[in-house]
Image 1: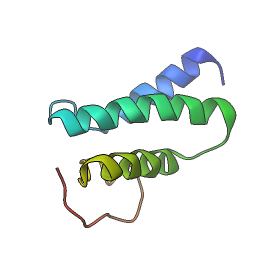
Image 2: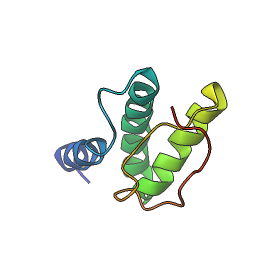
Image 3: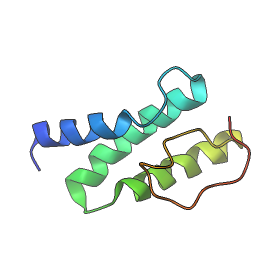
Length: 83
């Protein structure tokens, strides 16, 4: 995957994470952006696996689970505290 394709994929996926919902969601967007680019460049990792990694990292630091588009990221719904 070339750089332009990667940018397009990440841009589309980031559109499913809230922009203006506070610092926790800012962290999620930042973590997701960085991790997804890494995942796309080295392995065939799904967007859901990337999202789960990001949520787990934020949860470790804050105890909160940020919001994301649960219809786009097809994962088991996490039922713990949302931020």
